[in-house]
Image (cartoon, rainbow, N blue to C red; front, side, top):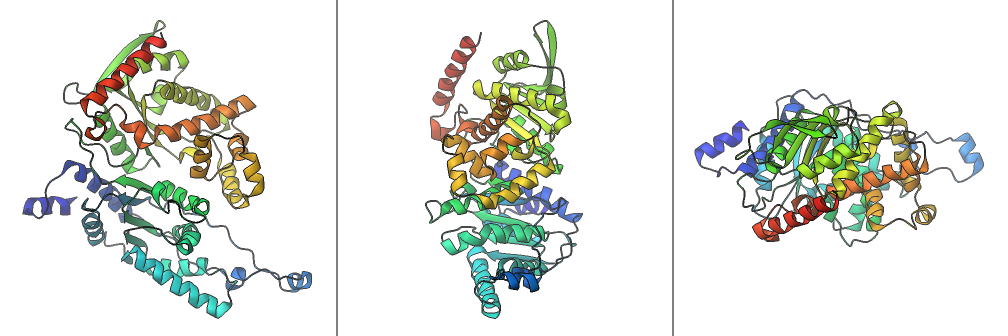
Length: 463
């Protein structure tokens, strides 16, 4: 941030509030890296990467070493995925971040992504020439790269080649398992990578990995008739790190009206009881999870809040274990109320959305089963609608795993869980978030007034 301030002061760049918010995200990662110590890089056993013996005797007398399952370190800082059009300042921000990395980051690399992938394919080719075409070279090459860099900065991340698409998820996850922090720029959102590519369904897990392990930040600043710029990141943030509080605050200021209605506490009487709103501004309400879901509230309370407010910022959402079943049910009821009222929802969570209602054991089981999809999966998903199918692709899950979580006891509850995740996915989309904001590209104030009429009709119908 100090480097950005210096460049603004010198006149080399123009001060821009939207860009300043992005620099703040870079600063959060910079601060995390100051205290980060990555694990020692360990290469996989060469024999474990060879193909299995074809004959029974071969497997008996020359057993293949077991492959170790890749685990991403819990202390790995979330990286950054900066996307935007040409001229949005991606390269400048990347260079500024790279040049000012903390002194304890002893190995770092900044490279154009196309050049990086060329180098990867050369390394893979050399390994296969030495060990045979059936040799699984990706884990070994990833360890080589990880030895050289603890922070990898890619410029212009893209995927247009099927050969890249088939190895990217495994490569990136292997790098992360060695504690490598990734920062990248791109011209497009992860969801738009490798669009219409051959066997794109095989690339979906890579998109999921990017969206889960990197903060996805939009560098394009949409023109708004209001003065406060839209936050660059999506509405959902995990984990509950140093950036979580600023994420919630930025969205609260954006969705509220701090200029004309400064943040304040509010009290509303619902069915003879008082519901306290810790922070309110305009039509936005901000709660800590325990302040709303942690109290004995229910559908009637949520419905009344929906009539009063149009946006909700909920911070500190925990993973809900079997012992927190009541909290999980209450939270799902709240999600349903937000969705049905077409309100907006911002969350900071302990874990990714897909893991909110699942234990560590269940989560690892889902990860293991990602590679076992095929004809059975196609049959199982035959009656799933497009929104749910997209959600399962995003989360790398199947319907059986989504409904099997032990926190819910009955089929109806498990369906509600799956539906809640589907609704969270839809409410996190750009179309949902920007609806009714009066952005110039959507019609300005006329669009906002039209949406207010829709909300008014909903209030009347829900009386």
